[in-house]
Length: 192
Length: 143
Image (cartoon, chains in turn orange, yellow):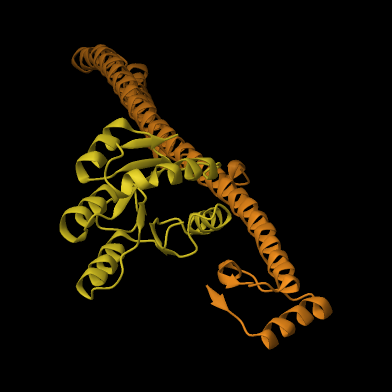
């Protein structure tokens, strides 16, 4: 225990009375009050005040602890949500890529088939009509008959059929590649 | 009343709670708080090496973030490498029986559950303190 001299005890009591300044902390429990009643009251008051302050601080600290715990839980919850969102985004991105890939395959297949059919039909027509008109044209040449009509038909058939068939194939290919490379670049869609 | 207490806990706010609780309950007026297990081990080893008075009781948190080992390992090291009958135990929010069994093996004498109302558990602990000092009290969990 600490024993203070009378002068210091008087000063401490005066300080408390005039300026409301008290000793605080655990040291107040270590001061020997001896038989000085006034000083005993003073120390009792110091200890009471210290206890009150500690109780208040304890409550505040516990509240802060609770708030910290809640914040940590909230942070952890948010992090989990972020992870889930990220995973969902990744999954949806994968699904999107897969869908695009599937669509591309389907489109390619359909267009290839389409191009193939058109080319075949065009070739059949060219060959069929070409053969017939060629035979007719050859016959007119050998027989000496008038061949102006057959000649013009033969010429027209070839020019029209060839032009149209390759024009169709070209259009389909153009639509296909323009669709792939220029997706979303439509001038009317720029504002979107 | 205990002469001195050493608290090892990474949560600085709990240092304040514990100090105020110990003062209000007159458990001890001399509390040292360390927030790292490595530092606590070095501190304790230093006390032993320099023949300085050791704390009467050591309270160790289970998970001490920022340390190279956990609270149970610290208990083991203090008990088996540096200690000499010092009262030591765990103070943690966990109530895991497996961890408690490990703590017993490491030499922990008590386990105090850390929660909002720590004061009643400390009061109960103080009642058993003599048994811990004399090594006669069994391991106990204060819930």
